[in-house]
Amino acid sequence: MDLNRLAARIVTESTDPDARDDGKDPDAVARGRKGGQKGGRARAQRMTAEERSEAARRAARARWGGA
Image (cartoon, rainbow, N blue to C red; front, side, top):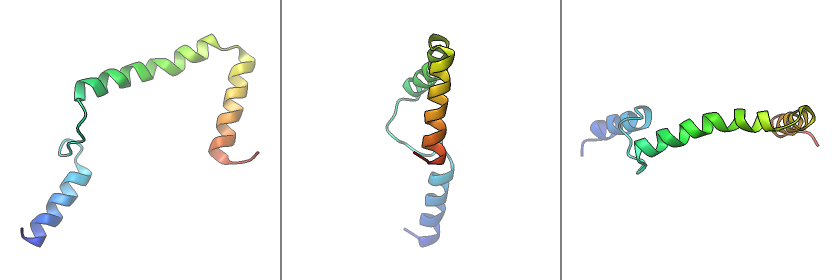
């Protein structure tokens, strides 16, 4: 294979999500994403204000560092 064609193929596959075949079923991925979008909101509704505050504190610590 020509080196230029290989380079073009690599760039296309790395930048075009439709060109990649990651072996996943697109319908299953869409269903999983849809459920994930509901999950955080549902979890927050079940938590008390104090639990939400603690979860936010832990998330900030994990994100920004600190003990």
